[in-house]
Structure formats: C-alpha cells, structure tokens
Length: 458
Image: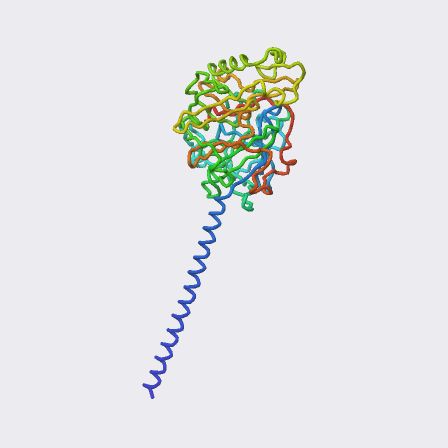
C-alpha cells in the first residue's frame, strides 16, 4: 500500500513538473516575440524619425528688410521667437531676461530662463562653443558663459541653457527635444531699427553646438540643412534630407577649416557673362546671415569695371544721391522691378576649382536691387572694407530662388534652381510657423544689412 501511494505521488510530481515547464516555454516564447516586436517598433520609429525633415516658413527679404528669419517655438508652454537664419555661425541664441543688461526692443517677450535649465561648464556642448581660448571651469557646477561676435561688430553675451523646442516633422510627428542654446542678456548691435524684427539668431554652421547637430545626436534627423529664399520675399528652411532632390542638385565638396566655422565650396574662378575676368582662386563662402554678396577688393573693382563698360550711357546714369548702396544708377524714369533693367546686365559665373568644375550662375536679379527711389543698385560690395580679409561671401541676394543644401554628413554643398514661393510637397501642411501670418508674408520695415559671419566665439 505504501509503495502504491509513493508511486502515485511521484507520478503527480512529474505531471506538475511537465505542466510547469510547458507554461514556462509558452510564456518565454511570448515574451521573446513581444520584445522582438518592441525592438522592431523602436527601430522603425527611430528610422522614420531620422529619415524625416523639419520644415520652417521663412519670412523677410533682401531689400528692404535685409534678412531672412524663421519662427521657433521654445519652452513649455511654447512661446514664439523670431530668429535670423545664419549659416555663418554655430550658436543659436535669443534675448533673455536673466535679467537683461542690454537688450534691444524685439517682436516678442524676452525668454525667461530657470536655474534648472542652465548648462554646466563641464558639459561637452559648453566646451564646443569655446574654440578660441582654452576652456577651464572653476567648479563642475559652474554655469556655461558665452560671448559671440560677428563681422558687423555686433555681439551677444550670455549663458547656455537647455529647453524644449516644438518641432513638427514632415512624417507627421510632433517632438519636443531639449536642446542647448544661448540666453543672451547683453547684446551690442551697431545699428538697428526699433523694434528689431528678430529676437536672436539661428546658428546653422557645422559645429557641435548647432541645433541640427544636436538633433542628429538625438537620432531625430540627419545633419543636413537646406534653405530656399524667394526673390519675392519669404521662402522655406529645412533640417534633414528627405526633401533634397539629389539627382537634380549641383554638388561640390565642402572645404573645412578647423579655425573657421562657415561653409565653403573652395576656390573659384570668376566670369562676367562668358568672359573670364582674370580672377582665379577666389576663396568663396556661403553665408545666409549676410544680406549682400562681398568680394575682395581686386574682384570687386574688376566686377565694377566690367559692369560699367557694358552699360548703355544713354539709358542708365550713375545716381550718387541714392545712398542705399555704394553703386546705383537711375533711368529715364523710375524702375519698378529688376525685369525693367536686367537686359542691361550679364550673369556672373563662379566656376569652382575641383575635379568636376561645378559652376554657380548668378543672374542679374541675384546681384541687383531696385530701391525705394526707383533706382537700380549693385548688391555686391567690397568685403575688404568691412574686414572680411580674403573671403568672398555669397550672401542672401545671390542665393535667391535657389535651394541651397549643406550636407554635413557627406561634407557637400549643393544648389539647384527652385520655386522658393512653394513649399516642397512633402510636409506642406506641417510647416512650422509659430502662429505667424500666411506663408511668404513678411515684415517690410527697413533693416540695416546684416553680416552674420562669425569672427569670434569665446
């Protein structure tokens, strides 16, 4: 009887062990499938984010505004700030009440930082903005101070902070990544109207502190920037490469100098129409923070000579009384648009000195403006007179009606003629406009020509 009872207990124990192992196997398989599905979903989400772009409506014009700017919504709840689009510098900054020591009247309220938003001195982003002098910290928790200066003698002094940015992606997602930017409490501006049309600068250089570089580090988009400024005013800006028409773009290698943070396609030879101007090896940079284009003295004087030589004296006469720009002409009657005078001028062509010899053709509307007096003026100025050294700067005026792309991942600069009045089809309804008026409508108040090339960052 005892043996029979023991056998029954053993049989029961074996049955329970079998059931337990079966259940463990079933749940383990289900968990593995769930985990695999979760990983696939996470991978898919990450992939879809990095393959998408952020699109912003651009406001402003070359003349009379003198700048192009976008709206960024910062903070929680988000508040709008208008920022000057500047590929000639890295750091994005807004005027802030920290408290403010010297701020110019702007279109929006000052950003108010919180102590917990401060970036500390030992953060790698703080190190990245101190490129001129050796970066040292008094203590690990010390705040990150910055001073940034521009070629037009403007500057911003402040502290680095992190806050949420409201970003609408072309794939339909709305994300609020926390990004580092400058909280500027002391601005020095050489000349500005009151109130100013912007609250700060959107730095789009290729340094680690740029907004686009931070977005790529977070896995949200690729480090590619594109802008399309319309000759009629307005346009669009995008982060990421999902909107780039790769097969149509003229590409050239991006030449980088560790001590200079701007985009350069390298050296170029200059032509006026089909005629070489005898100028070779000009060092060229692209800078959306410069309203006009700047040549070194030798190139500028050669260009002025070539233009004057071709002009019909009976139909165009110099207009020294018009002080809008250094070189202006008047006609027998006031001009209404560039179309009235472009027949008197030839295209300007830059042929870049690399293997494929890509060229950038700048039509007359890419270097001329019609002033409020009805005269025509040259939007190409002498860069040597404003401290640009040996740099020839392609500014906003010469990038109008072009999609210009800065692919930092592939280290290429590209351009293609485009209708900048119309957004790319992808993400048209997702344009980040921060509650501004309709696409393409911009302020028309006069604004002194900006020159966003960075000269110092401490």
